Length: 205
Image (cartoon, rainbow, N blue to C red; front, top):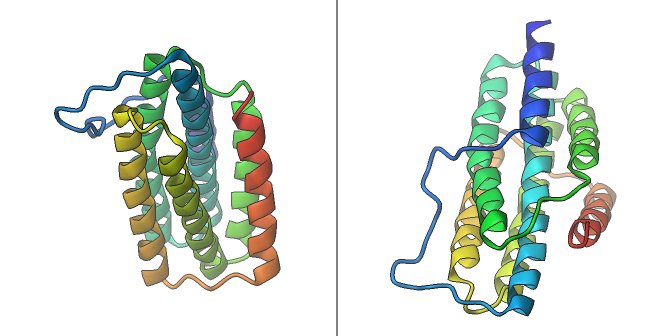
């Protein structure tokens, strides 16, 4: 019951609360961001997608922590989720600075990602960790594409995305070191397709 209540609390906080980062928001010293209205709109759409990704990351790690029977691995998932909270806070802050909002579908994104994470967790720790590796690999590629798509002068958003990318790479490496299995190609393809739907919809809604 305690684990259930903690999991429910995490869900409510992720979807409805305002988040505070434990680490300062990344910046580029001396570089001032000056954007046109069109650039602000595009940057905000991309950062909204990134925020949705962090909502999903919270759901995945929370579900996997709930599903595992390994106390050490549960602690690992919870620690990784706590680190992802910084990303959630940074992207929220940047969206406010750009005068835009988070996705209206965040409750749906969280519920879907939690269900996927729970299934992965129930299939065993090696599968669950393999899911982390593939997720983080795809997120890394996604963030890399955003570094190419963000307005060149948007130093604030670019600094956040660059730090997020570095953190996701580290999370994938940690999961591999803990014994992650390599997921089958069809599973990876399905994950890519689901991510494509999410990023396309979140860009607008």
